[in-house]
Image 1 (tube, one colour):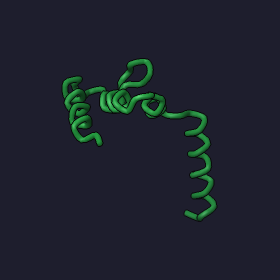
Image 2 (cartoon, rainbow, N blue to C red):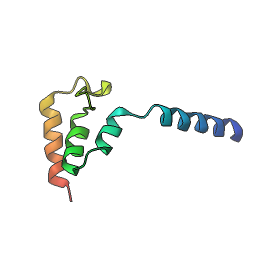
Image 3 (spheres, rainbow, N blue to C red):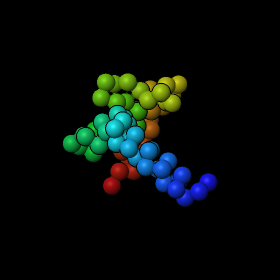
Image 4 (cartoon, rainbow, N blue to C red):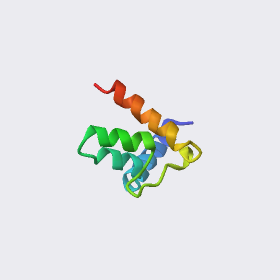
Length: 75
């Protein structure tokens, strides 16, 4: 693949992501408290309380354990 084609793909991707931000990441970034961001990230919930599609099969209990693990490792 030539360098110009790669640059065009990257440019298109960046433009797409700027126009269509990831709601889960944006929701976590918008939290005022780190603890809240950790919870939403670990539970994979967006601002509507919906879980990220690729984590839909995970049990709430497992995600809650993951959140607790993150809290234990928080500096």
